[in-house]
Length: 80
Length: 227
Image (cartoon, rainbow over all chains, first blue to last red; front, side, top):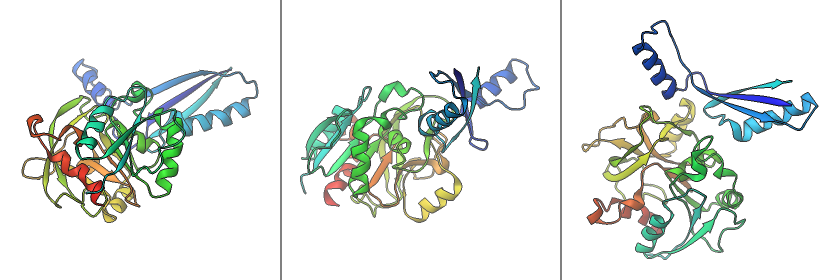
């Protein structure tokens, strides 16, 4: 099974990269962009067929290593 | 001054290990390099130093992978027993990732790698680290980092300030706060609540000789022997 973990800086935690890209888009004339947030996408292949069990493990992976929950939020997606 | 047994950790990608050895030997201490695969710290260690560098290439987040190296279990236990630990630059990042220090270090606000001398104001001296410095004095110490933008939530920050855990702040020559990398309240160095785990982005081990521009690092590192 394939799983995708998206990691973003929390709302309220300033995202310096997002801010720089927002600024660059503005200089290119894309002046309707109101916010840019940059995150990370971690794609995992799991040898597991139990979706519930996989979700539990992925949550543990995200909490311990994939995200730093002091500054980041994460979303887990299981792709069939 | 007391001779200390200083254990200096090495991860793949650590690059300030030998500067740190040099600095502590210069102060008359015994040093041992400890490879990250070790499961124990050398017996009778008085101080553990997590030196600067780019452990695991800064992959994922600076310090995030090193914090799970075998030696870090021993470091956690050592901290729990009240042992003194100093994290410099990448070492600071590793200690926050390991939750031995509060907060986290984000990418610098302006996204640039900064490498230069920087003035720092000493905010607290009632601890095992900065007891040889004067409260309010301005030090000149090199900084070299891309991820030094210290963040912690406001509530924890207020608590840390009240407990005397905010040790160093970036400042100008007059000691006025200066924005360097976007750190909350211009924080450059902190300690934990029990004041036995210390972390800072600047490199005191690079300020040990006047020929290299500053000897202020010497006074910072000397503190551990008088505590």
